[in-house]
Image (cartoon, rainbow over all chains, first blue to last red; front, side):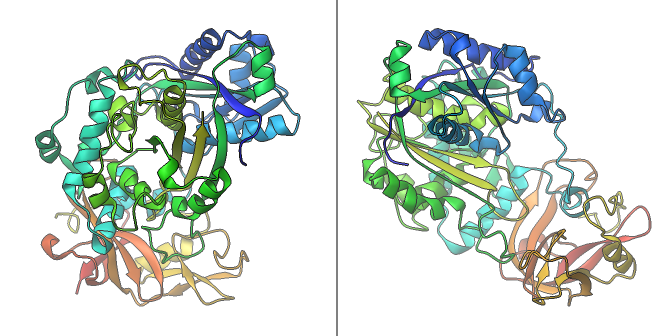
Length: 388
Length: 138
């Protein structure tokens, strides 16, 4: 990809709420209005739209078109992203391609969901026969399996997982959009006392499904300037892989898609891990964060626990981690999840981090995880490097 | 601990692909899995094509029912059809035929469920009189 004239020229995010009683449409409206307000653009200039498939509206295959009607947008390019937590970064990458190909000029990447109000997803497929009956009915059990396999191959230290949870919680205290319930400090004692839900996975290793939305403006530097927008960041590399090792039923499940896409990602950006000023990894579970330190080469394979324990991951530290609290401590706004990590990266590069602002960051690495498959790690891995 | 005595709801077959051979064999307490007839390799859960070649030259064939625990967990959160079964030992078992299944571990000391432990197929009764494949330590 490398640096081009394509930019993210604005972002907005709603607060994360639990059982808000509101719909994905309503949250999307709030995110769009916030984006128009923060960028100062007129709605009529938007000619591209990427919408994320939400859990709460998944029975409607035409959700993205309904969304256009709901918002009064008539795009010449419409993308409906069904890669879960990769749909935001993936939506930005696809919007960049569409702009490059001339299908649109000013695209909005919009993710909204309200599964804590209305859960309407039915995975169907093989699950009723071969997965749900054994009690593996959601991500926690699958991550319990992943953690025990990781622990059989590499050192997995509780204190490292706990440090991720405690560090991110500290960051959430500075985030006005974080779920109200999580706005209290967390101690290691709290972490150790946390209920085990699928051994060895604790409740405090895990996200909680909430409601919320986020939106990003993708355009060219030139068009942004014409629209009077001053702040922008450049996506300089994007990588995505779905169903890693998908035709090998006995693949090593500690090998993720991230480890496959990382070398080209850094090479496209002309960077190394040492050039990353903040890391905003998708954080459905603490083990996924720990494994991503390894996958992106911040440390070697199997060294994640020691790396976490030896590194200052706070917003004032050497590798600031999920500086808004991540999903684990801000709340997971359904499948608008990946946009939460992306919004924080853009916010930091815009210098709008408020009480959690990193000192003059120039780069950010953002990732997404989409879907938890049968007995592996995760379905889609996506990563993007942003440059100020 | 009680799942060998509690009867469980029977899954609806043939939702995704034709799985009737699997359930007919289960009724005889025989484990059959989908095998690619071009490569001889097994796959599970069943697929609409061979994972290895993309062809539909697939057949249901018996497997030994013996394998090794690849990983495991204990599920402590409730869900549909799990009444009276919590905490529930779950493992990913790698069969000797080179294919993995996520299963329950029954009739075994929970403390002895470890990565690398040898297991063999056991059968959990279902409400409709059929059986669901589980595994036990050997």
